Image 1 (spheres, helix red, strand yellow):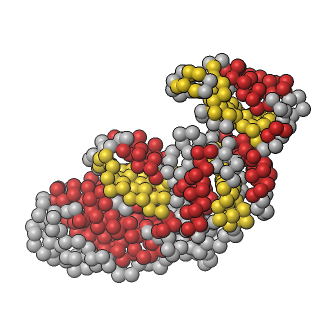
Image 2 (cartoon, one colour):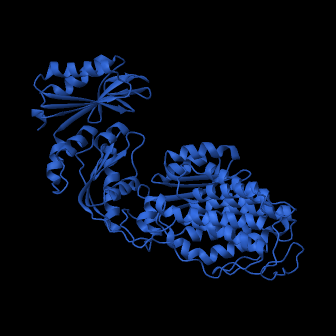
Length: 566
């Protein structure tokens, strides 16, 4: 369609009015109503104000990711809404087009939220002039839609500014203020809320800035007031509100936890937005999902890009999938990072959150993964970055994860990241624990780590997931298998028998230390029986039984100090 679009540098072209003729711009102070017929003009004023403030808002951007693009995303979202409009259509159709364009073209976390502000405005504008009651309803709707869209609402952001705007509008309605007076009261309340965001969020406080999204919302409110009063939007934004000094802020390139921003459109019923939002929350943070008549705009920060897209594709048809690595987006950090790097970090792949909680600590990152859910190269690189170390030791935890670890080391070297060192001998969870037991935070001794890992003879009892022929005969689904070194050495449905066969193989030549990782299907009684069975075979060995919550293995046992294994 041939609709005029805003200039890339922020100066909007003159638009025709609802009848197709040129718009006569009233003199300042003349006042302009907010109605369906003037909605395009209102949105153009908001776009102009955001374009003027774009660099300022980009410069404030330190939360949730210091990638300096919040102002740009807000401008591009409004421009996408305007670009959808057919100026020859009737006012009601133009309003629907604005809403559809905003959701379809929303950019980034801030843009997706702001699309809901636009949606709420459209829902409360009618053929009659906007009133104080309409203002209160619009702001309340914007607040509710935005909270509903966000997977994990955070105070000290645009959401807090919306809370204050709603309270101010309700006070104005209770005091029977006219619309200009109500908007003045709302604008003042939002300005105070924006100023306070510097002290609510730690990232903003350390950087000495207010929240970028909240400031963008304030600019939009100022623009709405300017339209109503017949004023031009300010030619210069107000000064950036910084504290006297800027403190240090600890971060890597991009999110502190997640390295990729994923955004896509999904053709799916609106009611699936809640399901999608819940599932994405398990894959990352900064989750925002908004719906607009069978079209969902999906946004998440994650390390599991393929999984984030696959979740959507199970619920609908994904299109316009965009993936951005924060390391690529941040070419000029908003805040200089002055973080002392530790000499050595460790990344371990372990099969359960219980084991992660057991070993994770300063300089030690754990990627939860095992059979069927092994980590990706991106997972390992992201975890390595979080150690903030010059040298990072990768402990694969599974023999099938070793090639991925090697690739991660190659990629990190090519991208001039930290030096990654793969201890391939640490290819089972017990061997990972053994390596971590001798790891040092200052001295890098790869031979020591490799020796400690290689000294572990490991095996497991795991349930068969299908009927198959094995070296020990036919097995059916649910049979318990004893697996050592990737080979099935025994099979039976009898749990106690398979426990004993595992120990017979591992402890035939003795051991000095036996570590038992118990699966989530074992009981306290099972674990006590396992400890007793080990002591009966190696009375002098040290035995440690850990309720490890393993999702697939019933038992995963490591024996150290086995003479024949040395």
